[in-house]
Image (cartoon, rainbow over all chains, first blue to last red; front, side):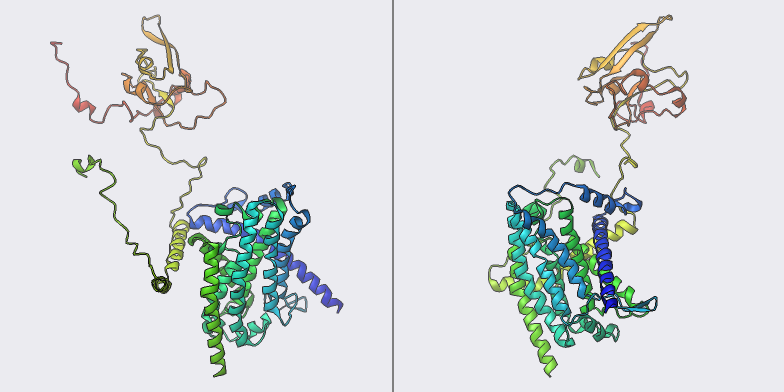
Length: 329
Length: 207
């Protein structure tokens, strides 16, 4: 029992450290890839190929004044970014990040807690994460913030139903909510991936995942061109940074979820070992988010609602129906 | 390109073509059909294809647009009119300026100031020559009017300096003696054309 607690604490600290570092590195990757796609160079001057740009940005964020507007609700204003960052990392608790491996004679399961409601927990936590932007926008006494939080509410109401319904069909097939069970279900190689039997669910989940992490076709919350910075207008320094660590951690989580549920998870792929396979898949999803950001325009809030409620939700329901009928037959 | 095509100044009508944008659907059924058509044709993925193509072009085919300016510079035209240069005679190394004062006379912003005197051999000598670059509009008249091709425009366009007098003294603009072998003729405004020798006529004695 003691060993379990120590192992859990070590895993939690490791995940926190690695994922937040990756989230910081993600900002560099995003700037670099967007630059390449626009045939620019991106950050080049701090360190080789600008790699140390994140260190420079981090120093800037840490030393910046922590500004709280006089009219703001101070406690809510201070707590809101913590909600976003914390829930993003809590969501990762139920996600198996790598296959099991042996280190110094101890079998390590790289999952903090293999609970039997894994997917529900992750989705719920990422849903709670939107309280961050919602409260931040309302607490800061700024009209752009209010518009940002109104858009947060719209987005939340729109995509959440699609996320749940699109995942229902794979859950029915696997018969479990644990992500490890999803992984073992697809152990038979590339032909057993759920994406071949549930392509519609995969696409719906990807779309709602983009909405969940407010990536570009649905980046309504803090679209600079329309609402200055939305919910993050009055934030500066590390509190602002926490929103973005949360957002990038969410991107990584969505990448893990999509590859675990639909693309075979951390099963070995041909000659690629399982650990590398899942990292490659997550990297692909991360790249896809940046790629889409560079290519597609973003849509209006009412279009997002139209899309989610009138197109995606009926599709998801029909998909569940057909899956159920096929399973009964 | 023929001459009349070049002289066609009617810009704006000859090369434009209307894009076929289709029509905006009126009814709900029409809108539905349009959405379906666009989804089946996968129009969104055309956008993705274009962006990834640009990325591969930039990374692997050397079509990156960025010029890291202070470290690398784009070439400028030889006819570019930046800070002036005073040329020397290649044979003697003496400056070409004969002190005629035409550049001072023609300068429309009155920024050239020159003083001349006779030296001991009774030849014109430039005793003082400055250009006030705070006033100069780089029109190129001085280079055009100069009969000796002594004052020309150079390619030095980065003109931030600590003093007002930078670049503008006669000695600063004059080609340094050790650089004389590398002195190039100015091909720009006021310079003789490549066929100048052929075009020149002998002055008749009757004049």
